[in-house]
Length: 491
Image 1 (cartoon, rainbow, N blue to C red):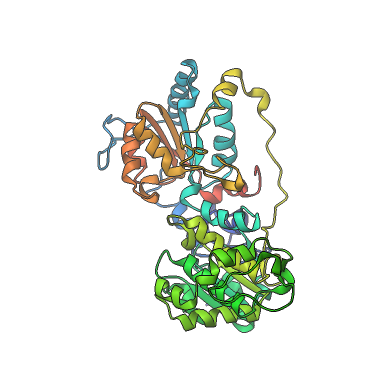
Image 2 (tube, one colour):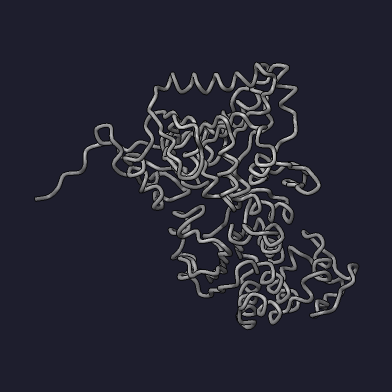
């Protein structure tokens, strides 16, 4: 017998499984979410969502989800030590947290409050991170961005002046390089990239630079499984071929005054011999770096075939400017990763694909409203103590953290734990939402030691984790789809 359609209604929301914030619809049957799909009117995901969206009902109703506040009864803290939590009411939990915070205010030391946010929603970013710390008077509000994507932004920031993620004109691209990223399976724009696969394979060439055989690599014509950490060498070699063979985009970049290519391997070029249009310092880059990075040298460094490097570079040059060099976190999440991010992203400039058809673009800005200013509620204690030095050491000579080309403007997440270990009595109250630094950070044991020393720690999460075992109070956070409007307001 034919089955009748399921009875229920689709309710709009937003997935926060990544920073794409896909518009989704949740199927509600008798008050219960049973299915998730991409919003049928969305031009960002074309009505589809990736596995993270489809798993929302399972996560939402997971039996291990924290459903009410918990209070620690075991004063000992450490890896594997049972917190011996007991359930308490919301009123009791919030009163305990508020009393601990007010003890700092009454003692005139609000700067001893630490707030650390992970995945950002309306609550964690705009209210706790942006408002509570300022009202309270603590300069020590931080994000975990340095564990996530700061260097991915710094590469384009120091080359293009764009300290942000990028958008890509996939529909008109003739060649896409997935470099240290696999957007068919993870990171951002997953539904959009999947929907574009057929067009990409028909109209252009897919290339993947990744040590592992990822989904993107499996779909690509060229796969360059370079040695991890050698991305900069490969990018220099590609630039070397583009320049020596005259394959740079002359309309965007510029050309030699006499129109004769003077980029010859191993030889310097006089700056006055080249007239640049939309770039700055190409000859300096050639003279100081690219002139010596032949495919043979890079091939030895990266453990790749020099002929493949040449072939890939020529493919890019032929397709320019309708080219995308999609630089992902795999390029830069390592020591000195900013420099690798800079040279990989700079290939977009050499190829003339920046702000071009089939190339890379500044991200689309959403028209959003903002919360009213709370400046009139900031008292003298908060004004005085809120301007103190942050404990992550940003701006120091040994830790400049220069986001947006301004010293001290970037977060140094792991240095928070380092400071807490060096000054174990400084932080007295710590609040953290949607985080798990013992798991996500490099050398997570330092975070375990630091958290063990915090007298009072509040963890706001939907599920218990390695970090939660150090908490004195656990508050169940909102789930991402339930906080969906956080993606479109307050930023």
